[in-house]
Every structure is written in structure tokens, then in C-alpha cells.
Image 1 (cartoon, one colour):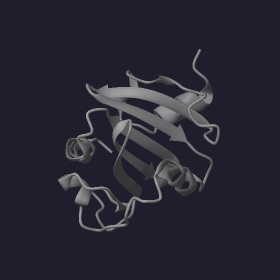
Image 2 (cartoon, one colour):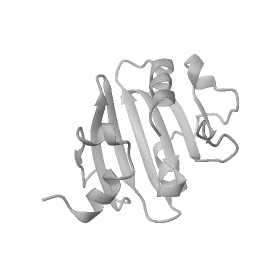
Image 3 (spheres, helix red, strand yellow):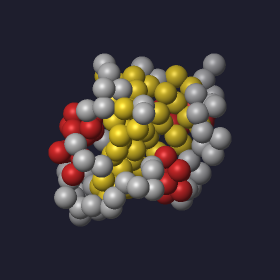
Image 4 (cartoon, helix red, strand yellow):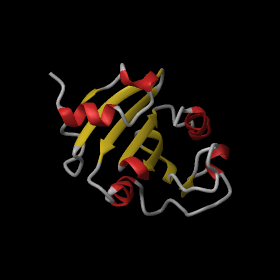
Length: 141
């Protein structure tokens, strides 16, 4: 049986991704609920439902301090960056923060959806940061 908190976090992600998700309670001790998903071939996704107003702190724990603050869409060119993001439907409204970078796991993109107190991390093992960013840009957020 799926817990009510897991059901709640499932409703925070796009419907097309939900069938690939499973509970991952040990993923983050700070999260109220956590999932791991495989939304598309080659990409692993972690989803964390956080307590109200704690998504910023959760994002900070996942992003190396060396990732630079930028405003020039460097990730699309394969360069590390962190900045605010918005949706195409509401480009003047900040939806959350995101960061992209490479680690020993591969290319990583971490973002918060502030209205839902959710933090997500996508990992592409081949290290192709530009391709991971392209996938994220097309995601039905």
C-alpha cells in the first residue's frame, strides 16, 4: 500500500512520469516523502517533498558550493550554473531555483518547485549536461 505522503508527492510531478516512480524513504532524511523515478531512458530522477518553506535549504544541500550563480543559460552550453527559473506560461514569476553541474554520478540538474515545496534531482550518467538541460526544458512542468 502506498502511503498518503507518497500519494501527495506523486501529485506534484507530471502524470507521464508517475508510473516510473517508487517510494524511496531512505533517499533524504529531511524530506517528508521521497521517490525515485525513471521518466525517460538514461535519466534517473529523485523527487523530495519538503516541509513548507524548506525547499531552498534542501536544494542547497544537493548543489556543490562551487557551482556559479549565472543568468546566461550556461547549462544549455554544457557549463555549470545556478539561478532562478520560471515557466514559459509565467516568465515573470519565479517558480524556484535550479542548478546544473557534473559530479562523479554524471550530469546533474537539481531544481525546486517552490509552490509545491518540492526538490527534484535528475541525473544523466553519460555526463551530457546540455542534453540533460534540453530534457528539463521540455519537461511538462
